[in-house]
Image (cartoon, rainbow, N blue to C red):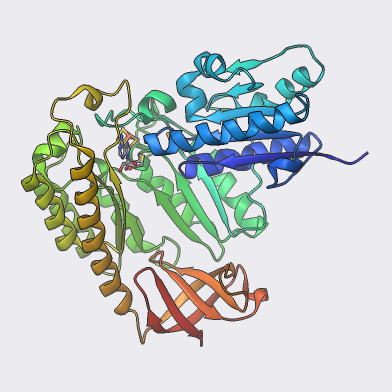
Length: 442
Ligand code: SAH
Ligand code: SF4
Ligand code: F3S
């Protein structure tokens, strides 16, 4: 008898990518072979995101496809929904889509195997598991496949309640993973050969704030402990909240230039102090810029990236121009730019002065254009330099070429052998486009 097959389709952020890797491991341990082909699967899971309406919309479409496949097979397909839509909608999702078999929230993925067994044995028809919202999920192993990146969640949840954001409602309150567990996980993945270690949290700098009797443990201390692990690897983290980024973190980054990647993702969201106040971000434009200046002084070679929302309720043209001013001042290497998207249940959803779609769209395009110019200028500044590249694998576009990243997180394409995957090589940059550098092996 051939092995049963399962697919997980992942939406959303790195936390979901991490949780998909955990589900993979659980499914494999329970006799499933993983595939990307939903038409050839006995079980399909959608690991969902609800941060913006676009993300939620994609999932609706996919669920429709799965329903059609399931009907054509006379019901012979397990459909599971995990992640933030599952956590947000709980039983409601089942009312809307009764053909779903399993709904598992963010804290409950460890229960996946036992639930599948019960469904297959016909003991239960559906399962909805979305409790334990504010607990630390049990530690489970993950399978990051043959890539070079392994991620480790260091804290879960968010206490910041930015007024536009659904995440605190679907990820619960902040709770940190014990430091020794994190250090052990990082050691394990480095021993397995992963070279790019990504620490995850909604607000990584609040790591340890919830440890009652241990005020010595914080994010800087955690970074320092991890960097004591020997080996050739790069350590990255997403995302720090600007209001909590302290100098001790920058000091540790300065202490380990070979280990801690030279990129800082510092989500600004808006350049207007009025908007930042309405967003509950707890910093002003001036404070953010002063922070960036401190970062650049402490780490002169750092690349900065960010997240920006345009068209937040009440955003005037002047507010928007403040955002344009910040991107000009900071010169981000990369920015994730979004139109404000109403999330029901958040304070901003019911604020007055919602911005019309056409204005949001035109502001987004203007912002993207300005940001692309910055990105191109920065990319061109690499031409002629020799950079250290962590090789990720064969380029999707051109099988003759390899793709990798530099410490600043820029993509580099160069001619080389697939055996270089997972190694650090020196590449001389010859040309550059907005997002990508092209070079030759040295
Ligand atoms: N915890 C992280 C990431 C949160 S979600 C942080 O605070 O940085 C990732 C990004 O999605 C946010 O930084 C924000 O820019 C964007 N986002 C969140 N809610 C949004 C909404 N309602 N509309 C548009 N963008 C949103
Ligand atoms: Fe959302 Fe703000 Fe928390 Fe980030 S810090 S997850 S944007 S509430
Ligand atoms: Fe989306 Fe949940 Fe991440 S809403 S962005 S998958 S925390």
